[in-house]
Structures are given as C-alpha cells and as structure tokens.
Image (cartoon, rainbow, N blue to C red; front, side, top):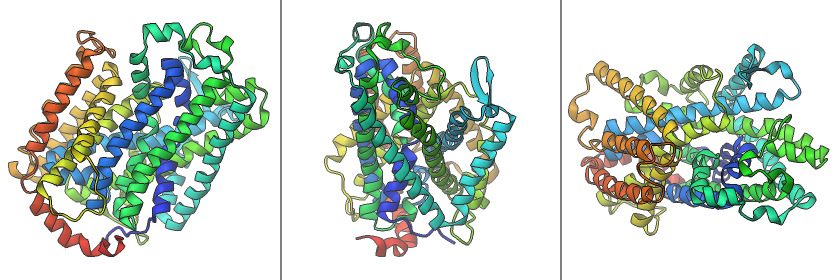
Length: 532
C-alpha cells in the first residue's frame, strides 16, 4: 500500500504556514530585539531572503521528485546511502524535537491559570508530574488526528490556521494603534557600536528567526501526497516563507514600536518581562489591553498546538522514508487503511516523550534545532545542480531561474546560519552526529551492506564538510576562540562553501540517471495525472 495524493495546493499551503507559525511568533520578536535592537527588522529580512533561496531549490527538486520524506530520499538519489543517512538523521532529530517543544510551550502558557502544570527547577519552570501527563495527552491527540482521519486533519488545521493568523493580524494592528514610539527604531549606542552587524546575524540564528522559517520543509516532506504538483509544492514551500515573512516583520515592527522608551534606558539586552507568560502578553498588560491579553493567552495555546500537529505529520514522513530506503526496520513503512504511516507516528510519539525532561530553555533549544536543520537543508542546493547535470533532459514542471547562482547562495547561507548559532550549539550537534554515525554503522553491519551499496565514494565529502564547519565554529567569533575575527569569517566560510559545493557536486552519484529512471518507471503513472 502506498501513500495517496490527497493534499490540494491550498491544503499544503495552510499546512506549511500552520506548521511555521508556532511558538516562534510569541518569542522570536522579543529575543531578536534583545540581541539586535531595532536591527532585528534587518535580521528578519536576512532570514527570510536566506530561507527563500533554500526553499526555491527544494521547490524544483520536490516537483521533479515528489516523494514522502524528501529530506531522506532526495540525497539518497543524488549521493547514496551514507550522505542521505547523515542528513536525514539530522533532519529527523531536529523535526522530532519540534512537537514536544510546542506541546511544552502550550503547557507553560497554560500554567498561568493552572499552576500545578509546572514547578521551578533552579529558577526555571519545567513540567511537573501532572504537566507530563497532560503533555502525553496532547501528544496522543496530535498522533490520533494524524492517524485516523484525513478530513479531520484538514478541518482541524483549517480552524487553527484561521484563528492564529487572525490573532497575529489583530495584535499587530492593536499594538501599533495604541502604542507606537518611532524613536525606538533608532539604534541604541551599546548595540550599534559594541555589536552591530554581528548582533543582527546572531539574532538570525539564535533569536528564533531561522527557527521561525523551518516549517517550509513540510511541503518537501509531504510532496509524496500532493496533488497538482506544479502549483501545490512551490506554493507551499516558497509561498509559506513569503507569507510568514510579512507577518513576522509586522510583528517585529509592532513589538519594537510598542515598547516604552523607559524600558530601553539600560539597553536592549536588559529588556525583560516578568510575571507573565510572554513578551506580547506583557505589552498588552502594560497597555491595559485586557481583551488582547486574554486573546494572546488563548492563542498561546492554539499556535504551538497547530505547529505541533503539523510536525507530527511531516516528521512521520521522514521516518517512513528512512525505513523505505533501508536505514531503519521495514515495519516503519506500515500504512493503515486510511493510508497514514501509523507505526512511524507511534515510534515518533514514544521517542518524543523522552524529550519531556527539564530543557535548557526555549532560546537555547532553538539554537540546537536550527543548527541541525540548516545542515540538512544544505543538500538541496547541491542536489539541484547534480540533477541538472545528470538529468539535463528531464521534464521539469517547475524550473528555478539562475539555478547555479541561487543554489550556491543557498548553500552559503546554510553554512553561515549554522555557524551563527555559535560554538556551544555546534559542539552539541557534533555529539548528535557521532551518535547517528554509530547507528548507521550498526545498521550496515546488521544488513551486511557492501561498500558500493553504502555510497561512501559519493559521500566522501560529508565528514570533512561537517568537521570543517565544526573547526570554523571553534575558531570563530560566535562563541569560539575568536582566532577568526568577525568579518573575516564571512570570507573563510565563503571559500569553504565554494570548495565543498564543487566537491559535493563532483562526487555526485554516477548512478543518478539510472536510479531516477527506475524511480520514474515505478511511480510516474501514480502521479502523472496530477501534474498540470
């Protein structure tokens, strides 16, 4: 039994936007402003442009190769098993963590009214025993909706989508109308001179901005279930980024403008809100907008819930694809009568429950997720050029203009954003990569895979590439040893990116054309009628 094509262009767009607009909009404008001041607006533009470049490469790839769990299957086709496993491991690990984090965000907000949900550990709120029970219940609800009814998933997503977008627009209009201070948009000296562009770039990676755009990958993971491919996939992947960029910039402008100038006397880095569930709620309370405060508290539950629901959907497709390729046991590909990968959903639920432990905080978790997620993005620009070279005559219903330039720019942005998360985050990511390599080794030993089957030759660049990023981060200006000064790191990463972009393309799988022909023969009839 195969996954069926049932997501219309509008369905896929709403799923992507709903998955993108989660807890990020509630926190990112605050953290970005603390780091970069009014320069946070520039940070949003940089993050949006960088993500759009990456999204455009995946748009062409996902129309050409519309499969479930594209994060795993696309690199498997372009560079073989080893490369595919490493990158899909990073993508799965990052995506798996998203739903539990969004559920935790729901309960942390709800604890404003139900204090028994959390307790303080070293001054930080973490889930109590009752909170863990409610977290289990919410995760189960998300999994059940994803496993039982397609119409139920679409309808529930539609309701959440309308409500959260309406609340965001209302919040922007209300804050600008009732409190707007133009002087807040002038750079504060301590940020302008001490941090400047470094602060803006740090805000992109660690202030929640890059995290806020991660939902565009839902269109990639769900491409195997999309109808009208030439419309639905580009619309979901690129359209969701552009729509959310407009919303996020509006929120950032409203947030900065609504701040009392007195709260910025000691600098942006000392900006804080105490005694409330979040920065926007703090602004509403300070302005006496009780109606907006109550609306924000409700949406603080709805927004993360919507994102968590969609991450359960797409993360299951990554695990499903990894199982189909052979990295994981075959039983994970099992589909129920409704055509949902229920075993993959169940396994993600079980593993995800182990993540409900005291976490180091929203911002630091976001940094870790971004570092892993953007590295998994890096294969998109590379794979696009590999497909262009090996399959020049393949019919492309969506063709990216200036593909070589945009692909290199996207790859460069991926490396920069990973570097901007800082050495502390990259060092933790290195441990996660090492664990993944151990899992891969055990799987290969068990399945008795030959050297050629593993694709080590076409993946020879992967480990040096990852080690190089780790070394640059260790020596760099973002939490590293400062041996590579800020400014020069752009040049070094540019040279690094140029070298590995060329090497990765050069060592592409020489069987790509043959494998793609096999793919077309086995799946083309299934979706050809859906392409318009």
